[in-house]
Image (cartoon, rainbow, N blue to C red; front, side, top):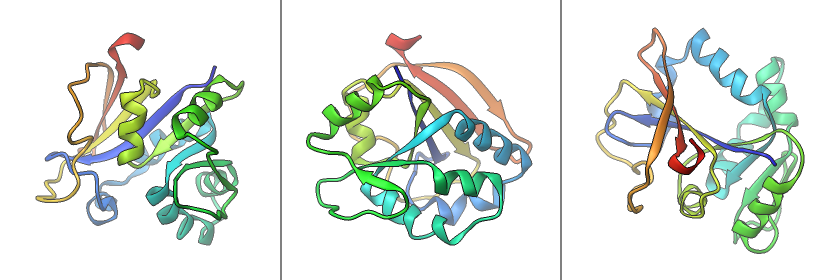
Length: 180
């Protein structure tokens, strides 16, 4: 059975939207190494429509390093009720998204790495499908924007590891309480 691992950038005030505006100044070799380790264990990406469209608009234009080439080469599974065509080695999950994700988890293989946080993340959390979270907490206050999993019922997570980078990023690795 495969694991779903969600990797999410978040500010101190809980904002997850527009990380391109606030995250880049903190990226360094430690950030790159941690991100590479997550990607190394994955054999596919799991993305919501908005994250897929944003990534598909930029990642294919890059190449020449292991991380970028791996991101571009991995199969992508996209949750969308409106997207009809994909590029960038992607396919839209068929039928009911939750049923399709459960089928992906039941397959043999490496982890499914999920980026981005929105309605798809909420659906996965509500259905108990995420096995591990990596919340990258950046030392910045955005002031406004979409909040991390706003509006969800209380959910108990267990912090299993915290990694602090010299840049000030702290990654909280957490699992749902039933997985601990």
